[in-house]
Amino acid sequence: MRRLQHVTLVLFMLMNLVFVTSSAGAAPLAADRGPWAPNVSYAVNDTVTYNGVTYRCLQAHTSQVGWEPPIVPALWQVVSGPTNTPTRTPTRTNTPSGPTATATRSQTPTRTPTRTNTPTGPTNTPTRTPTAAGGSCWPAWNATTVYTGGSQVSRDGQNYQAAYWTQGNDPATSSGPPGSGQPWIPMGPCSGGPTATTTRTNTPAGPTFTPTRTPTPGSGGGAKILGYFVEWGVYDRNYHVKNIVTSGSASKLTHINYAFGTVANGQCGIYDSYADYDKFYDAAASVDGVSDTWDTGALRGNFNQLRKLKQLYPNIKILWSFGGWTLSGGFTQAASNPTAFANSCYNLIHDPRWNGVFDGIDIDWEYPNACGLTCDSSGPAAFKNLMQALRARFGSELVTAAVPAGFANINAADYGGAAQYVDWYNVMTYDFFGAFDADGPTAPHSPLTSYTGIPQPNFYSDYAIQLYKQKGIPASKLLLGIGFYGRGWTGVSSTNGGLNQPASGPAPGLYEQGSQDYKLLATQCPPTGTVAGTSYAYCGGQWWSYDTPSTIAGKMSYKNSQSLGGAFFWELSGDTSNGSLITALYNNR
Image (cartoon, rainbow, N blue to C red):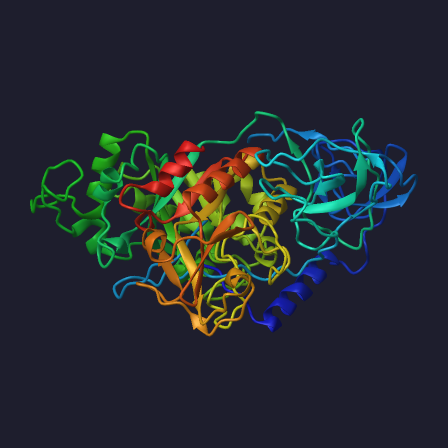
């Protein structure tokens, strides 16, 4: 659900960003704040001292344990003092406190996932001073260990430092200088002996938005497993609420987002009333084996089936999601009167005909103060104000939102300020790349990390997660997004397994060109390799990328290492008939 904006739009947004950060004309005055401390609000140009070094604040923020100045060059620039202080990797404890790919049908809104806006911020990487020749070797690299940015290992007489989260990438074959996109940075030859210490000299030319942290061992993450159920799936896809049960998925899900309701005239509304509450289900098709009736006032359709599902599986909470790529145009008007909008949504969700089916509301605004299918210019505070009004109206019920994964869109709205009003955010960490760029280059649509040849720097999941954390959003309120579909091109050379190659256009798909459900790809074009924590497949001139049970296990390991609140996926009908992808989420939760 994200699409690269035109260059002129990106430049326009960048100019706005520069304007905002320099508002009031003059640069903020520096203030000497003394020794750095956690849980303190720092303004741009404030100076602090840490271990005898003076640092200048690059971005206003509230400090946290694990964001010490030497560790987060995105926030702090060295002003004076020693530059040979040994690097420290502190243990950080997180304080506990959207989505969507497409399926299209003639009767429904086109739910085309679109590509995250190109990040326009600096991509400077701190310069690390390599270990002197003959230094002591760090602990040996292990293929099964999860390493986070800054981790130090040795391999075949060489020391390496992790550039970002990685698991299973051999430093001997997956290393390069800072900024190369490789997970490991070579730090020089070594010999046996005690663990060595490396020095790091920061060369800040701007934020990197990739702070390193070492999660508390065994801390893990939340166990939320949320899936989207699309109302139009009952047509061409022939996927119904009962399929959630027959696939074995119902017992593994914690939440379902029902997609989508409309946003029009400043109000929440019904999009497809027939699918929602009128379609007749006989006994064989019904979740509980009991037929619908045509009695006056009787509830039918998806809503009645969801009500029955909750009765059989009380572990599941259901939210009604509003907006999406096609239906987000109405949010601009809604944001002009957030209280009226919130009241309309509450009244619709609690309509007496289906009251009790839904446990809350999910907002999929694509995108606040930015452009999706349509553009919004409500200002950076509009999203926060909207979520505040929804929380005030819905009280203790669930209030969540799907949020973007691209740098420009993340910084366009006050997601950090709005976090206090939501139960969690669904971070749409997919559709980074796809055949919406018809001529390629081929690239995985849901990379967990960076990799050599990535078409756009900082277009990957971990980058987005770290950026949200830097905005003060607790890790427990972030859910990692996973697509139950692939994106692909045709007319691709087999060179390099088809990765980073030009293409002639989108590969054919059953419901959308360039997109195909996992349940079909798993047999039509099985995986032939992995890159950046996800799978790819080359077959007959086509190149596809998608997640598999194996790569989902790796992403869930990442979720746990980052103490995230859980994972969500788009969408249920893309899985196999026995729920193999949901099972992978559940078994690795």
